[in-house]
Length: 608
Image 1: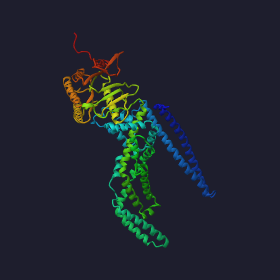
Image 2: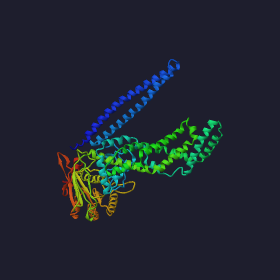
Image 3: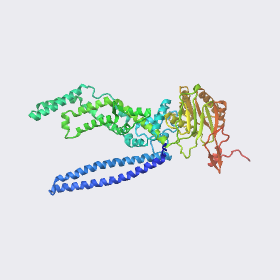
Image 4: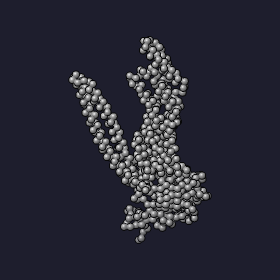
């Protein structure tokens, strides 16, 4: 019998209750261990006083010392578990916020990925507060955020999209893995500077002459031998002569050795943080080709990435020994820092070229994990069917049933069908203000973006060919650049026309086309631009509240068709159903809206 998949909200609430109960229990344990440590410390202090007075033996101090050490170890374990439970609570609380459509402002908005010159990123609300990126992203590393952002900003080839879909399909039920990665990577976003890390790992050798390492080994071996000779014979001469030789060897290299040692400290710390994420991924076994290849990429010559990072961490710890005042004289005598520096350089030669790949792998896992969480939390979402290539005559296809906008609360979402296939290549959408025209354009665009990223879409079904998406929904004037909104719009349209000449068809979404000019020029300009785009194989939608512009559909028939949104007044209020209907709109609500807000719009003509 097939198992019934859990309801996402119910599963999150159940896990949230478990984590809260665990946190409460761990807080109680934390308090008990704190009290126990205080009591043991007080007992140790009392025994020390009694021992100093000669009342008891100092050997009894061993009992509280050992007890305190055991309590510290166990208390530390409880603190780590408590912190993990608190992070898990935050993980599921944010998941519930997404499911209950109160997520805006709770995640990473991705503001640094905004690009005013991108053909659709601002128009479709990809980045910023309440954006698609904030809804989707579970990434804890910069690499993960950058990977997800790049997928949203650039359409991928059809084969790549299908590979991601299979990976997301496998990861969708893997809630335990998503939670573990969120907990493992808690400090990654704040700690890891990916660019600096890769620059260090792939940088030129600091200690380029390999033969000097052999000389260092020879000097160290002789230092140990002469020290033994000194201890047996009392003759310190050979040892002192050897130390002088070491100084003469070390001084010319001192700057490079110190550079190799100190330059590794930050990267080692960053990689150690990343290793927690890598170690969790290395335990997984995947069946989809994409995930299996990513997992295999975490092994370097048979050594898991987390283990390789562990080697670097231990080398940095060995360098830290030099700071111990008791170890420092011995370290200087055996060229300890020199050997550690050469070992770090060897680590860079062996693993440095793989650090970027490790970061990219973690980034792709996080991006796929983010999209799989979106699918888990939206069971009604479906994977689109990506058609291999443009249809005959370079015609693209966008065939969507039950399209909804993922950033609109599910209780308020109205779904519509959009068919741009066969003869119809353009929909001219008319309607009154606030009726839903622009929202439909954004709905088409954002679902296309999801589809080309490999994600499920907010639709009952969607079939589409590869496209380059271009939009004019958020075109603005610019005081700094000295350009009007109309100039900005025609500049973007020129860019879209150039894109339409390329090998991949254009999906255009044009809001209130040429509304910054007079009706005559608007009609002529719109007809010419749209005909040019359609002739180049582009498909798309335009909106207008200028009923004269609906004539464009008649001029371009049968490649174009009119559709509209309508409204009605009821009880003095304006109501919309947000459902697309065939044909042009037959009335406007502008005057009614003006009257509704109290504007005097009566005719200025005198009736005396």
